[in-house]
Length: 114
Length: 112
Image (cartoon, rainbow over all chains, first blue to last red; front, top):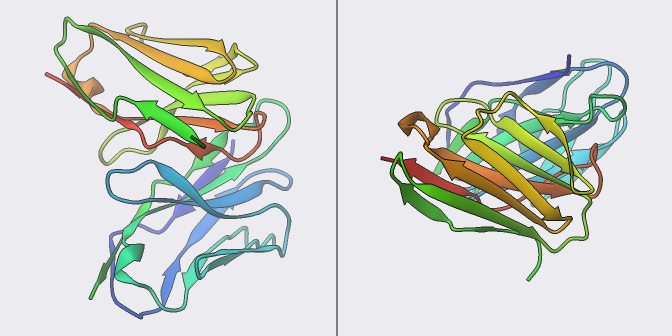
């Protein structure tokens, strides 16, 4: 079945540091890949997505590139802010048949200190 | 209003109570979902509805009963819950099943 593995947290950074949160996936064919963010006390928000190999999703300074050869979709940001503190979830959808569900990683807690 | 709206945001209920969670989406989507988010556990998909028909029930106990009267509304009826059912319950919708989901802010449920 489909699965998503993302790096264990928590991750603690200082403001303006570089962020990488690793995500790898297991799925047949060509899934669509997503990063969701959950701010404290809130639901999940779609941060960015990529639907085919070599696509780069970007939003709010965050980027992730769909790497078919390494089955990865790592999240990066060049300079984090305190307001980026949240839990980040990597997810995939493999459409077709019974595999239509969003499959989530366990989430990575990011804390950014001033 | 836009997006996915859940009410109430917070709910405290006793184990013998009956309550309902409400979700409404204003996105014109055809699929709606209930997820459970517990501390230190992955997101759990509970129910999936497509065009008002339930397409999935992931071995959820019968004390949770979903209802989808139309494509814009989804309810989760709760009765005789246990303390371990305390969690954040998230509603989501998507254009169709297999598309990315848009989430509500969740209902924080505490069972006492």
